[in-house]
Image 1: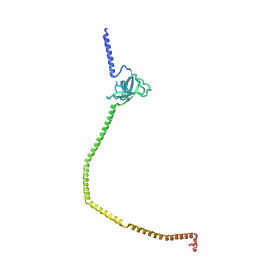
Image 2: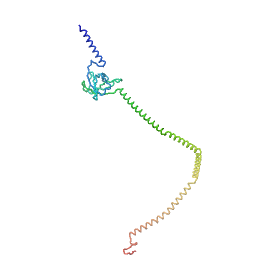
Image 3: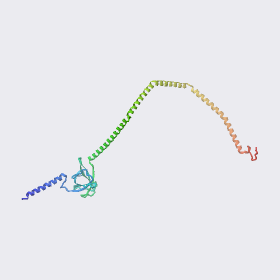
Image 4: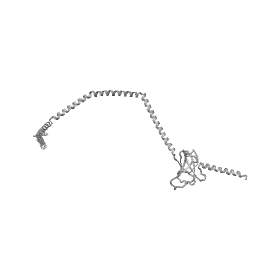
Length: 294
């Protein structure tokens, strides 16, 4: 009986330790009464993933991240150990995808199962294929940063254009180009005023005289047209036709005898050539002794 008190203290301490271990694991999300299988994944960047992060399949929690090991001498420095409920069977092709867990920036792992359910089951302790999908906040942050960067570039471009404009304006002012331009504008304005006065004088003094002369010329032209209309054009045309008939008759009288004489001369010449070819001795002929035959 003298050890009864010590035994009670020992049992109470054991119960307290068990409750502490169970409560601690419960707070971490570990169910010590549910058996699990371990798997591993390798990542080059964890993007804030921590131990005890949840493991999901289609949004249902099936495990958690047990431990994270790292070796910065390798490109993929982080090895993540996860525990999955033992009743979950992972077929070949399953991927460990690092995803966002809520809007506060936490990370979790989503197990993406293959659609081919005929694939064999992956052995526990195997390494799974890993991937990373940025969350909504990261996507929005990237888009906002991209827009901000573009806006900054646009502002820089606008500032450069303003600087160029100011420099050009300053150059114009320093070179008295604006003053010369204003002087030229004043001179042109004065010239336009003078031309306007001259044009007004012409319109007032000379235009009435020009219009009167045009009216007189039109009246004279009307008179000439009336005289032409009053003339006996038919008689004149008849006389011209008669003269043409007389000329045609004269040409006919001359053409008939003349053509007859020409034809006779051509016939005579043709007969002479034929006779010359047939009797060449009838015409002048010189012998080798210088005598002349008739």
